[in-house]
Every structure is written in structure tokens, then in C-alpha cells.
Image (cartoon, rainbow, N blue to C red; front, side, top):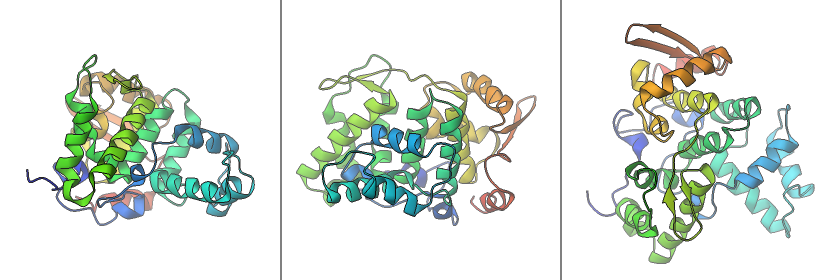
Length: 278
């Protein structure tokens, strides 16, 4: 691999070498930039906004009013309020017209324990910089130390010539904090890998992300989204069955053949679009 050659798992097998035609419609983002260039996952801010809009469908103007005029995030300046909203939009979309965010909101309200993993999955769909850091997490076993140079090396390999050393250092700080927020790492200075506790909603969202990109059947279980849930495909299946019981997805099993669909989370038209992805 040549230093500076972007390593984006959404542009490798099993997804393919190019963004699917309808990926941006669903809310996926590609390129070399992303929200982690300036912030972390911002789970505290996201939680506050989601609490303020629970059981509603806020418009983009509603999000702006909450952040800028009402200052529900308690930011000290008008500039900081606007910049925070911009970063949240980069990371999550913050628009119910975007299928990924609409589903994210539904699953967020359906369960509390899986919220950090739901935010992780959506951020991975939308932030290439965050995606570049995933090999570090996937290579570490629970209990392994994860020094910052692991992330530095990953970024140098993925985007080396595009960013100055000071910017790489900034990216490392941001993604390190984000992986602590998701539960994959613990520790402030010296970080250690730990296993996350996956929930039915997180399992459903991980599968849906791959489904929107055109994958079907057993292939849904073999993507980075599911691997970051820290359980095997076999161990994930009972959680998928629970997600079916909770009306998050439909599951049909016949021997080793598995069929999964999401009629309660995405529309018929959106389902049709996914068949043109692969």
C-alpha cells in the first residue's frame, strides 16, 4: 500500500471499488474529509439534542433554532453554536429526509443502551476519517494496549500527504476520544481495547447500513459494521432474532440461508433503490 492511498472500507470488498449510485441519497459520504477533522463523535451534544426533540420530527430549521437561538447545548458564543451544529450535520446528517438519520432516530428512541453504537455506525457511514481509523480497533483484542501511534500510522498510510503532521495529531486525538465514547477503548492517556455490549438495535442498524449498500443474506454479517460489534456472526444471530421480535427487521431462516429485510425502517422506494447498488 502506498503511503497516502486512502483506505476506505466502503470502497473495498464486499462493497465494491466505487460508491454505489444511491449511496449519497441514503446519507453515506465519501472522500478524504469528515467531521473528525474538527470534533469527536460529540455524544453528549447529540444526546442533548435528541432529548430535546424526542418523539418529534424536527426540520433543519428546528435544529438550527435549538442550537443557535435557544442554545440548548450551552455554547458560549454565536459562532460556536453554529459551528457545533455544522459538525453535527457533517457527522450525523440531522435531517429526517435522510434515510440513515431517520432510521437512526427511530432506533435511538427504541433503546437506550445501544445509543453509542448507533452513533458509531451512523458516523462510520458519513465520516471517511473515522472509517480510516477502524483497522486499529479491529486488530486489537480486548485487553490489548492501543497506543496513539497505532492511529498515527493508520492515518499516515491512509491520508499521509494530504495532511500536515499537526493535523494528523489532531485526528488521532479526535478518533481516540470517539472510540472511548463508543466503548471500544478505555483510558484517557493510555488506552486499552475492551469489548462492547451489542444490542438488538445496534445489530439491526449495522445490518441495515450494509443492506442499503446492496448486500444481502449472509454477506450482511461479514462487514466492518458487524465486526465492530465485537461478536461473531453466530453470536449476532440471536440479537437479530430479538430485533425481529421488536419489529426492527424481518428475518427468514432456512437451513444456512438467511434473508433479512427492513420494511418497518425503510420505504418500498428506498428498498427498490438498494437493488441497484451492487
